[in-house]
Length: 271
Ligand SMILES: O=C(O)CCC(=O)C(=O)O
Image (cartoon, rainbow, N blue to C red; front, side):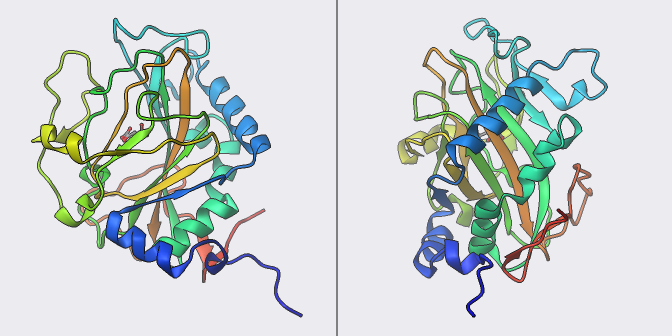
């Protein structure tokens, strides 16, 4: 009898893997069902209501932008949050999402570990230079190889004017680029590439639907697009590594880092 266990070969074709290696990113359309989108979006909206007195509040980054005030959905203007399982175990379970983790495996190799869990929230008016062009590897270098991927799951429809991730195809081949602190008054204060002006003309902003997932190599230059719409836009941002991708300098101690999620091209989960 044929096996019914889903494997990485069922979700990623050789042509998709080749395009990923060339461009540095891959979009999974409809990774989540509408019910899953609702479940995780509701959980993220609840996380955005976290009080200042919460023990883990320091894992949530707040924005202060005059042109982008807080909203009822995001009353403290949290723009990024880390170590999400500390807030709700559903965010641990999400790390094992079959379609997403097997797609990651199809793109980077048969054995995959979790590296980091985070989220991004953009209130209306979120500026396009708040989280500007950067490589995520700036925060994980040096590692034993470049197979660290960022995986953004959109919980709202988004495009280049409503907060989608902008990417610059092929920039993962440039190696580590120099990064500097932003110079604008209202920014995330997170490091961005030194000569960021050159990337806009080369950028791709895809139109995504809630439930689509973007996978890209941590070396790929990317940014958060502005949210010029009048509604909040939410996403989950997880990182996965190949099993043989290790921190060589500072060991990043994110919650769940090193947890096996795919082995031999098949989902590996404890429940
Ligand atoms: O908004 C996005 O999708 C990208 C976010 C990002 O690159 C970051 O927070 O480091």
